[in-house]
Length: 311
Image (cartoon, rainbow, N blue to C red; front, side, top):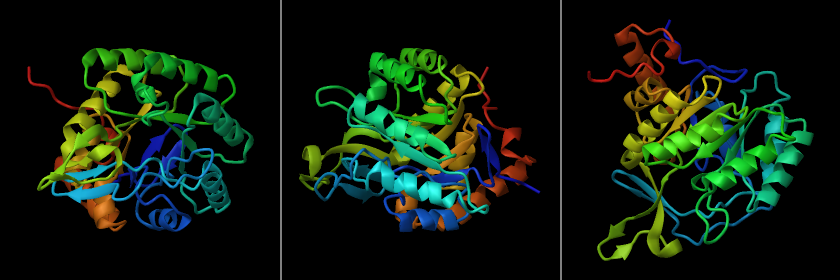
C-alpha cells in the first residue's frame, strides 16, 4: 500500500498535505473544513496579539498563473486560534495542528509565545518570520541579526515544538548564513516559502490590488522554482532534526512530489486551495500516490531529498 503519511518532530500525520497559512484558516469554520478534509493537518492564520482587519480591499486577486496579495495580516487575534486548537486536541480523533504566530514587535512576539508556553496547547507552533515587522525594516528573516536575537531570546523560555515560516532567499550566501543561524537552535522545522514579496501585476493600465499601490506577494505557479530551490538549499544545509515544510506553487501531485524530492517532509497548498477549495486534497493525494506507485515508492521517505544532479 502506498502511503503519504509523514512525521514532523514527534508528531505523526496520515497525509503529508495541508493548507498554507493565509488560506482557509481565518475562522474556526474554515479550519474545521480543512480538519474534515483529507489534509494531514492545518495551520492557523498567523495570529497577532490583537485582532486585525488587515489592508483595504481588493487585497487578493487570482491571475492565470497564480495570485497576488497584500493582506496586511488580517486575523482574529492569536487567542482565538490558540483556544480552537487547544479545544480540538481534547478529541482523540483530532489531527496534530500548527499554530502560526507573530508579534508586531519583538516584545509582542515574546508576549504571545509566553502565553502559548503557559497554555495547555500541545501541538506545533510556527513563528512567522516572513512578515514585515517594523516600517523601514525588512521582513524579520531578511535581517539576520534580528532573527538570531529573537530566536536566542525565544529559546530561553519556549520549550514546545517550534518552527519558523521563511520568506524566499535568492542568494547562495544567504542560504549559508540563514542555515548557520537556524542550526544553532532546537527548531523542529522550517517552512519554505512565503510568497515572493513585492511583485506587481497589472490589468490594462491599472494595478490589481489596492494596498501599497499594487505591490504584493506573488503565489502560485510563479513561485514553484523559487520554493523548490529554498526547500532543497535548506535540506542540504540544516541539521537532520530540523525538518522542512515545502510551500509554493503546489496544485497537483507532481508539484507535491517535487517538493518532497527536494527534501520536504510535509507540503502546504496555498493559492490552488484558495481557487479549488478543500476537495483539492483528495485530488492531489491521489495524484501523488499514482506517481509513487509508478516509481515503486511505498512511503515518502523512499524518495525524500533524493534529487538527482547531472554529473
